[in-house]
Length: 340
Image 1: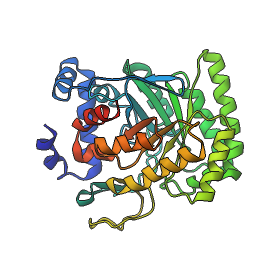
Image 2: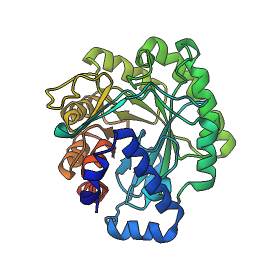
Image 3: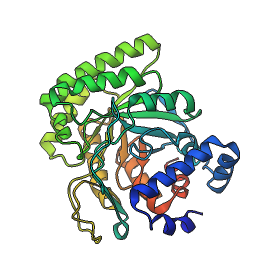
């Protein structure tokens, strides 16, 4: 089915094609007959549950943040076999993101460049969606981001607000400090900013967990563009802060050789050209932390072999996004089979 639809979608501007896809998935989630039809076309693989940072995941394969920013299509996405879905990035208040055009499809490279800048309908909207439409039998994470206008020294306030809002509505929370499209956000990865901020966020998380009577795993999503010394320093801060896991990694600002005419666009690159960088990063993180910090690997995974290599490199779970654009929902089953 997707092979027939893809040429039509690729005639649309990327953001319009993505919005149309989300609406279709939302309709499948809201209408049981459509949902069953979707599941019959893309039947999930036999799932082998796995326990990671205190949660039981139906399988190792998840949807990365950025695909369903506002929690619109969770139920439809759950029908195609994911073990977890990470919604967001969510900001405390609605914000439009950067000016368009801001998403570029590099078809020849099976890649995407985006400079979205955290467009979000805001925490209240996403919380309402989770409260009323969160699917069962699947792990839901929420990816949290600071408001574009918030200065670095006040960034922790935004994340605290979001932790309070989503602690009761999600299975885990991710602190996103690594998007290249919010000016200066990646500076929060440096120990100078990161250490005091994480101390405050972990304290808030622990208070919420105590009030709810359950654990709330908190993860940090980092960039793939670290040098060795900077990565080691950041990982040491994350380890000392009692963070439960790490997502490796966000989009890259580096540019490997690319064929597309869009190759010089600014923004974060995702898709197949990122894979080698991502798997090397997973290896570095796994080795530095001696395997004690669970890793969710994301970046360029577009085949069962890619997913298996990420697990072999030290990841506990994998996530995809850009590969869905080029390979469609059938990829999920392939990845689940490869990692079971």
